[in-house]
Amino acid sequence: MVKSLAGTDLSEREIRARIRLDFRGVSRPGRLLFGGKTTEKAAEDAREQQAALFRNVPLQGIRIEDINMSWEVYTVADEVTGAEVAFAPLELTVVAEGMDDLVRLVFREEFRKIEILEPENVVLSRYEMERFFFRIGEELARYRVALERKYNGR
Image (cartoon, rainbow, N blue to C red; front, side, top):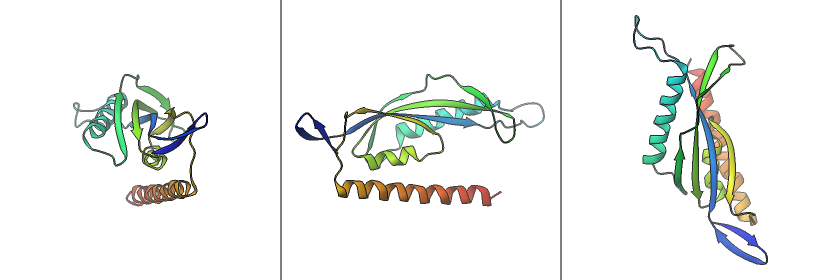
């Protein structure tokens, strides 16, 4: 719960946010002539898999209100390789107990955008700010370890 200031009233509220994640599709050539996946299909499959995880696996401090998968898959040219890459957007509407709980979703590679729906403003105590920055540090360390595994494993 965060403290929200409405006029002269200070009340504790949960944070409602809309978060957009874009899942990347990696095409896989099929065996012989059959079984290959296009980048668009791979992106859609990744989005559906992640949506199922968000529906079925609870996240501590976060309640998922809505999962919107109606966004169209889009393709862009990869800056490094020049090949076309497809992305399938997924929009989550979540209710979080505190700002530090949202950090877990924001520090994902797929993160693109966050919109805070409620409350209009937030008042943080010194302890809450320390906890928020501590969580950012934890997630950054976790992300760095994941990147090291990804690139050293090749």
